Image 1 (cartoon, rainbow, N blue to C red):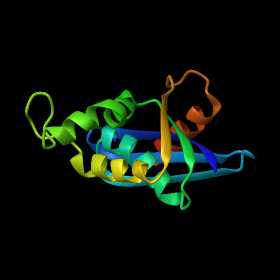
Image 2 (cartoon, rainbow, N blue to C red):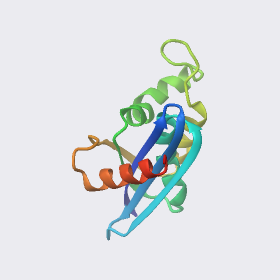
Image 3 (cartoon, one colour):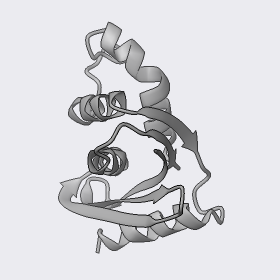
Image 4 (cartoon, rainbow, N blue to C red):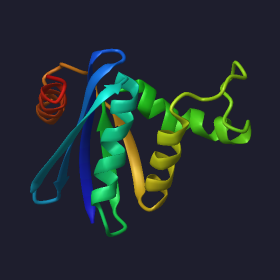
Length: 141
């Protein structure tokens, strides 16, 4: 099965009340929207929660393209994570990787599927990026 997932996270204050959202689309453009909130969190944690929770919904091994407007998430999962694992979860400045718990969950979730990551510019008129942004922001109220 081929799927597209759009994800976003938001925070009111950083740290503050956070929200995450994802829209899962199948080939027929059936749309499932999921979202959630945490009372005291950061924007980066919410950006990571969105794809984690979306991938958790997909039970069958699938080909998935995930669209995120977070370079932190895209670069982290496609590039930095390999180095972090080799360096015992230390960043290039030898400090512990922030949000390691979520990076491990995301990495494990991706391993179950064939995942392609795409970065999209935020607030640039992409229909689904705008929808997940609105949904994530609504959770921070």
